[in-house]
Image 1 (cartoon, rainbow, N blue to C red):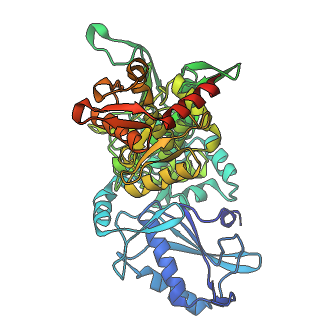
Image 2 (image 1 turned 45 degrees about the horizontal axis):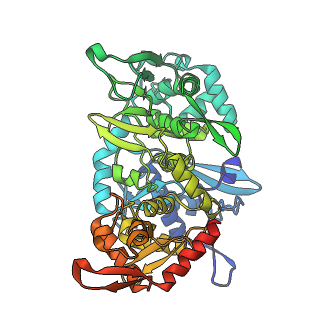
Image 3 (image 1 turned 45 degrees about the vertical axis):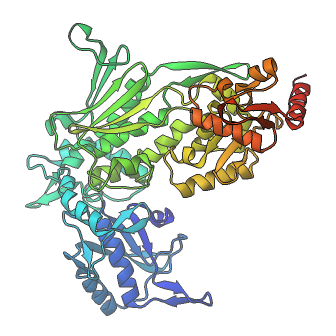
Length: 555
């Protein structure tokens, strides 16, 4: 069975009737244990996007089958129906695979939030059933109405309103055997029957309809290209191109790639004496942003389409509707793997069709792609009844900084580690743990990632108790001390310096600069003479030896 070979995921869970004993032997699970596992998965899927649970399949793709007799099977199914509040509704189909009997449980997204009898509530996220807190459970209950626009049955529709070729291509891609009508009905829930006649849901019309505009006034994408970096008004109106794309979603994505992709500027970079073309915007990043907008937009807001605005320095993707359900902007910006579908039927088709990544991974993947290309991370904002994602083509680091960072290219550093090194470069080659935390991480993460830099030999502790570090670099381990160039003009002229002679850059505070000089004196590079502001700092033999070595290295 191809479905089981895929392993668990957002729309599939595999439940075994066996468990390993402490000695490693396979033992039969009790009906109660099997029932509890099924109840958790089915309720989690009902609370999310629906899905399939195969009982008798193992996570490694093997089939152990079920051992329940017909009477036990009947009791198991009856107990499952009443295992949650409100009761779970699902379909059960026995299947024979490799001589073993399996049970296929199919559950659809529910308008209500299902709680198990023990009071726990689960949500399917990727291949896991996540237990929800009371707060998140409450938010989920309030937002369930959002998922029902796509499930509305269109009374004047029929199967003839579907693009037959598009449906056949999708079903063939899934390698599913059977009539298209039955497959669209179950497992995808895209058609429903009224008085024996198949009618389309809005999801089916938007995905496969011959004429989506018949069912929605703005189902597609508006592409607008501006001249400059801001939207002009009146006499400063600066729209140079506007394209409206309308098609069933499974065709709209290809049209979107052709129209928008063909208009994105390319840049040419000189690297290693060869000219190499690179898109100003990574293809995956803007494509994923648009597909997510199509999949998760609020289709009940019929006066607006997904809008793509192209400026000289950025792309803005405007999706009708605020963030759905339990999602929060800060969660997404922290790249937490969270998932909630406003349109679970549409999302499932796009996922099965290979257009979308594993659910909950879209935005984190965009962050990673921007980072790999040396570009600033995307911005996410809610504005009115829209959610706006901004992708800029400006690099995080300028050319000189990238050249300086090249010495660490073989170290596989993450974006935060690179950013703290460039921060240190502008601040006398030192940084503190608190500086690292300003990059958006907690103290423990900062400690772990700084410790990694120390282990790699890139930085070393500069101050024992202040959690201050200095960059060693790879090109020259005997490079001048942090901040030394701020006082060298005075030393060369007078043979000493005072704090009045400090010439630190504007990016370094006066207090930090003074602390650095005191630390160098404590480490024996300078000898202080006098008191207060008039204290003179004379170079020691230790410093003179270092300067001599630096000069020899330069030679």
